[in-house]
Length: 180
Image (cartoon, rainbow, N blue to C red; front, side):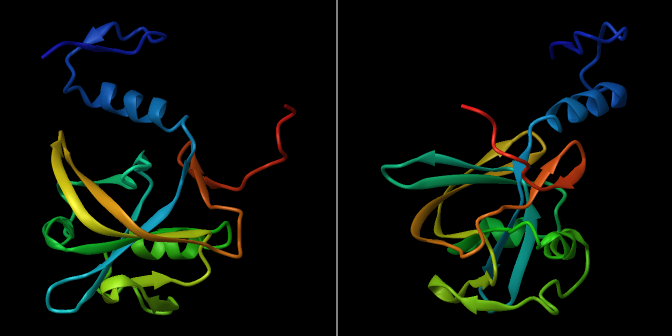
């Protein structure tokens, strides 16, 4: 394994398994602002599951594909790896509490969350900026995460356009537009 180095640090090259390097690497990644999503699905027995995710990206327009990743230590990993359909709920700026709810390790994360049914009965969180309803296309091991690729069958724009943002380890809201 090659050494991982933080170029502007006095650490020099240290083994890539060093907790110090992991912390610096995570801090550097946190400089990239991301939207906040909740991925929802139904298990084969009909139980609604959901998890907060910020590792969500578009992959392809034709066919319409997205990807997201889930930690290998997530208690929901096996369930999400087996579902046929799921939804990506793009949280709006006023939905921080929903992000925190689905990030918690509580048994029923849907308590108090208004949902409606999407394709395959998958719960869609009300009040979001957008929704992507997907079927499971592929999955790949990715280090300490599982990368899931979904084929988008339906997408909807919400009435609320301002998304919830995560940057530097904190929730944020979009500021003024930059000059062009």
